[in-house]
Amino acid sequence: MIPASKRRMTLQRKIILEEIEKVNAHPAADEVYELVRGRLPKISLGTVYRNLEILSESGLIRKLDLGDGQWRFDGNLKDHYHVQCIRCGRIGDVFCKPCEDLEESVQEKTEFEILSHRLDFVGLCPECKRKEEQQWQD
Ligand code: ZN
Ligand code: MN
Image (tube, rainbow, N blue to C red; front, side, top):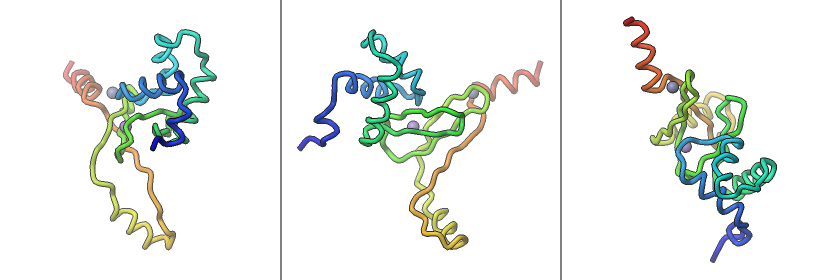
C-alpha cells in the first residue's frame, strides 16, 4: 500500500525530494532551489517553497529551525540532533540516544507533561577550530 503522500507525488516534488535526500548539508529553501534547477530549469522559487511545505507536512523530509533565521530541510528521517558551527554555519548530524532522562527531569521540575524536546548544539567545526588555532600561533 502506497501512502497518500506518495500517490500524489508530482515529478517536481519527486525531484525535490531526491535532491534533498542526496545531500547532507541541510539546505535552506533557496539552496534547494539551486539544487533542483539543474534538473528543472523552469521551476520557480515559489513552487520549491510550496513543495517543501507539502513534503515536510507529509513527513517525507524534516523541517529544521536552528535559530539562524531560515528553515532548513533534512532528508534523513532517523532521530538525530544537529550541531551548527557558529563561524561558517555548517550543520552536522549528531546520532546519539535521545535524552529521555532529560524529559523526565523537566517533567518533574515543571509538572508539565513533556511530549518531546528540541535540542541543538552549537560550536566550532573542525575546520574553523583549526583556523582559530593557527591564528593564535601566527
Ligand atoms: Zn565552521
Ligand atoms: Mn540532519
